[in-house]
Each structure stands twice: as structure tokens, then as C-alpha cells.
Length: 316
Image (cartoon, rainbow, N blue to C red; front, top):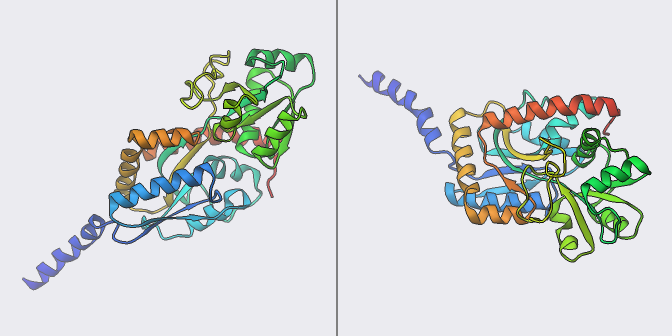
């Protein structure tokens, strides 16, 4: 009789442990440095998750090496749900094709949990630019040499530009920059014709009239810049490139913990106040299933792999 009771308790023990999750602090690793839009969004989300779970949820910034440092730390963590990662798209859809050797396999060593947000980009020009619309940009790019400035070679900004240029039949000199501020200053100073930026970085200059937005890459008009037409409205039908941010875990995390985390995130992202705050940060909240994030990763890899090979991009 006692053996039967002990055996039954042993069977119930894992269930009880899972039911208690989380019963200690949870850590979320992110490749972005403190203070930027992704970090700010994550800290708000972490605070709300902590309130929902009754446990602290702390953010650990591990910037550098195109996200390799943060991803490496994530895959080495125990797959128990107590270490998660807020992963930007480039870490799993660009870096694996642009680095000769990685100490991990992003397809095998990570478990998708939820697509948290998408981040549309905007094409911007100086206030006095003769380019008044996206159509002007396309026409002029075919008639004379134009320049487009944005972040470094191999970043999501660069790859979105290359995709868009091919889709629209545009040719322009791509000028990589170390920061959004540098690109904006070069635009205002007349050293660049067009810039590709994030809404969170350029909105203040657009609102003040120093810059103008030609088009945004979101499928629908973005609430933070409602007067800016989409690329689809401007003639690129069915085209809306938007890098994403997703929550992931080390492979091997129990499915029930994935389900709990995903539901908690999705519930928070439905809150109007949270959605409004994310919009201010230039993000469109999503809150997808793990399967939807996995499908997004595979689709983006299918696009990025051949393009990176064609361009010969190598990240150090």
C-alpha cells in the first residue's frame, strides 16, 4: 500500500512542479543595449509579466557581436522557462547566413514562444527635398544617381533596402551609418538624398518639420504616423517588409511552460495601454502562437539566405 502511494506521488511530482511555474525569478536576455525602444518595451513587458506571475522578471542586456553574445547565452541556459530571450529577427534570419561559424544552431537550439512585435521602417527625406512622394523617388532613382542612408551593412535596415530596391526597380548608392542620428544629420545637411529609419527615431524630426516621410513599410498606415502612406499604397502591391521581435527559449523547454508564457504575453499585448505605449516606441504589437513565430522565421530565412549570398555579406 505504501509503495503504491509513493509511486502515485512520484507521478504527480512533475505535474505539481509545472503547476507552480514560475516559483522563482525569471530572466529575459536581450541583445539590445539599455535605453533603446526594444529595451524599453521589454522592461514594460517584464514588469507586467512579473505582476501576472507573482515573481520578478528581470531584463539582462547582452549587446554586441550582432546578437551572437545574447543568443549564445540563451541557448546555454537551462531549458526550464526561467531564462528566456527577446530575440530580434536578424539574430536568426541574417546572422546564420552571414557568419562563417556559429557556436550554436538557431534552428535546433531555440524554441519559439511568441512573435511579440513588428517594427516598420520609414523612408525619409529632408524637408526641402524635391522628392515629395515615393513615386518621385522611384522616378528620380532611374534618372539620376541618388543615395540612401541607413544602418550598417548586414543589418535589417540594409536588407530591407536591398529587398525594396529589387521589388521597386530602384538603384541608389547605399550609405551605411553607425547610428540613426548620423543618418538624420546627413539628410538635413544635404549629404544624403533619402534615409531609411525607424519611426521611433525620426518621428520627432518629422513632427517638427525638419524631415518628411515618403512611405512606411507596414501593411497598413501606422498609428504613430497616420499621414504617411504605405509602400503598398504607393504601388508595391503585397509588399510590407517588417522586421520582428520575438520571445524564445532554449530548446527542450516543457510545452506547458511555453503555453503559459505565450498566453501571458498575448494577454498583456491585448491591453490598449500596452499597445499604445508600443506604438509610441515604433512597434506594432502581435502576440502570436509559437507555430506562427516558427513559420515567420522559416519564411524570412528563405528570403534572407539567397539575398545575403548574392550580396556577399560577411559579418565579423
